Length: 190
Image 1 (cartoon, rainbow, N blue to C red):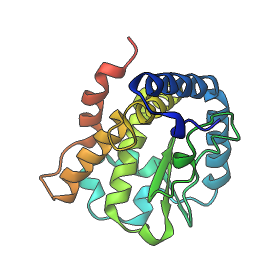
Image 2: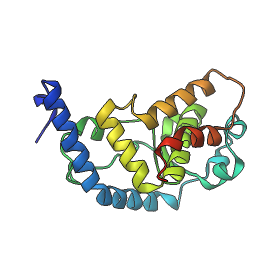
Image 3: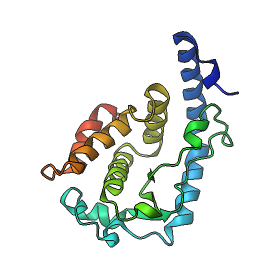
Image 4: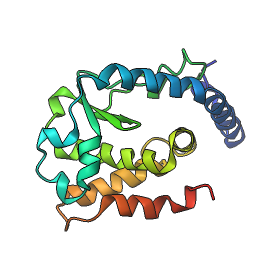
């Protein structure tokens, strides 16, 4: 079933979003299993962020985060095989080739961008988000955010892009971890 071609009215669009969100939530254990497999596979050879000597990151992130977050340098960043995992209608995301992607305490960066501070900054924002929200809440919020608002406007991506812009424009360094924690407060389960 491919949803994109049938979205013609707001009602149908809402129904499709509901179905996609339901599929994602039902398949969340399978997605997390895939995440565990992919991170386990790359962990042995992935350096820690601090080992790349990216000059500006220590001004924004605490040293323990940089020492404990691994970076897999890859030709193509791994994206979950959503259709194979039972989630239909998200082929645009599945075929996407991002600069970087983050899972748990590891992120992936394309080889040609290995020393680009900006992509590392962006993925470290997601690393902090994942640490704060934990597996299921992060994955649910990320997936439903993309379904509801699209990639760039989804809450977790919007935050990462906005903070990245501050970094790119060389504003005074700030505590990214604290900023992310403050912004995620409404999403934390009490």
